Image (cartoon, rainbow, N blue to C red; front, side, top):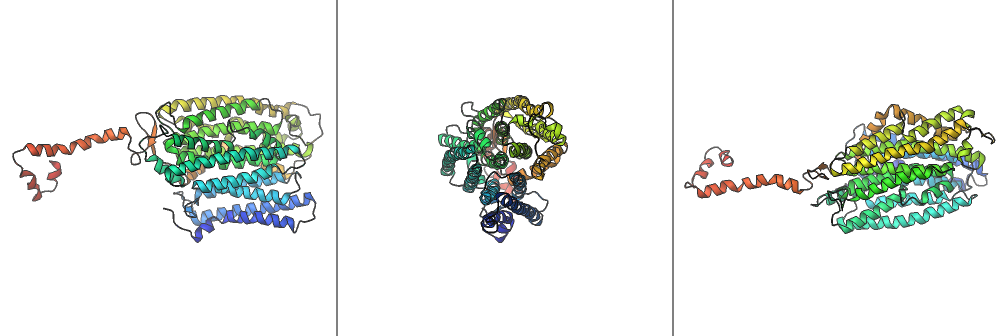
Length: 580
C-alpha cells in the first residue's frame, strides 16, 4: 500500500507547484504592471516571464533528480497517497514537456495573434502542468482530472486568434468533440472501477490478471469498458475514426497552439494510454480466440485505418498546417502499433521504451515543422505550401534544416525518425504466438505508408529547392523561429547518429516508472501472465504428476503386511520417510 503524505512529496513535486503559481502570477503581471501597454510589449514581456518560469522549473527538477534519486533506476516511488509517480518517469517527462513548452513559447512571441496575452501564457503554463500530471498519474481519477484540465486549456488556446473566424470555429469544434469523448471515457473508467473496486492502475492490472481466462472472452462489461476508454484516448491522439476535429482545429488554431496540440498533448496522452492499456488492462490484450481477440484486435484495426487514412489524405493538401495535421494522424497510427506491442510483448518495458523514443523524435520534428508554418504565417498571413517556393535558395541553412526534418518524418537514415520506426517495429515483430501474424501485417502496412508519406514530404522540399517564388521576400525569422527549427533539426540528426543515448534513457524511464503484469507465451500461442499470477490450463496439466505422486505411498502402505515399518525412521534419519 502507498505511504501517507510527507514533506518530501511536496519537495519532489515542487517544479509543478512552481509552474502552477507562475501561471497565476502571469495573469496578475498582465493586469497590473503591463496594464495600458501595447500588445507587442505585453507579448514580449509575458513571453520572457513564461520562459523564466519554465527554465526555472526545469533546473529545479534536474536538481531534485540528483538530490533525491541519484543515478539508479529502481522502481519509482509514488507520492500523494500513491496517486502520482515521483521518480525517474516523472522527472524525465517533466523535463521533456517543459522543453516542448519553451519551444512553443518562443513561437508564440513571433507575432501578435491575440490581445489576451496574460490568459494565453497562463493557459500554456497550466496545460504544461496538466500534461505532467497526466504522465505521472497512477490512478484513473487523477488521470481523468489531468486529462480534462489539459483539454480545457487547449480549448481556450485554440480560440485565441479572434481576428480570424476559423479560430473560433476550431475552438468550438474541438470543445464539442472533446466533451463527448470525455463523457464516454469517464463511463469506461466507471465500468472498470465497478469490476475491480479500485482506481489504482497497478492494482487493476493485478486484479484482472488473477482471472483464469485472459482476454475478453465472454466479458461483455469489460468489452464495453475497453471500447469507451479507446474512444477517449482515440480522440486525444486523433486516431481514426475519432480524428474529424484534427484537420480543422490544426488549421484554425494559432500556429503555436497547433504545434502544442501535435506535440505535447499527443505525448502525454500516449504515455497515459500505455499505462492504462498495457499496465491496467494488459490482461485483456489478447486471447487465442479469433472471435474474441481482446483489445488488440480493435486497436489493430484503428491503427491500420489511422496510418493509411492520414497518409493518403495528406497527399492532396495544399495548406501546410492542414498537411501537418494529417501527417500527425498518420504518425498516431504508427504509435498505436507501439501501444499494441506493449500490450502483447513479453518484455513490455522495452516495447514502451521504443515507443517513447519515437514520441520524443516526433515531438521535436513536429514543432520544427510548425515553426516553418509560423514564419510564413507571420509575414504573409497564409500557410500554403506554395509560400515555400524558392525558400531554400534564399535561405540555404533553412533548406538544410527542413530537409533533415522531412527525411526524419519519412524515416530515412541516418535521422532519428528512421531509428524510431526501426526500434518500434522491431519490438512489434518480437511478439510471439498467434498475434505474430497481426503484428507482421501492421508493420508491413506501416512500411508501405512510410513510402506513401514520402510523396507529400518531398513535395515540401520540391517547393523549397526547385520552384521559383513570385512573392515578396520573407523577413528574417529571428531567434524565436530559429531556435525551434534549428534545435529540432540538430537533435533529430544527433539522436539519429547516437540513438543509443536516447533509447537507453527511455529504457530506464520505462523500467522504473511503468508497472506491467509479468507475461509469458503458453503453448496455445497467446500471451498470459507469468506463473504465480495466473494458473492457466497448461500449468495445471504440468502440476498433475506432482499431485498424483502423493497418494501412491499411502496405497502401497495399505497393502503391505508390516504397518510398523513406517514408524522406524522416527528413531533414525528423518530423510527416510519422504524417501519412501
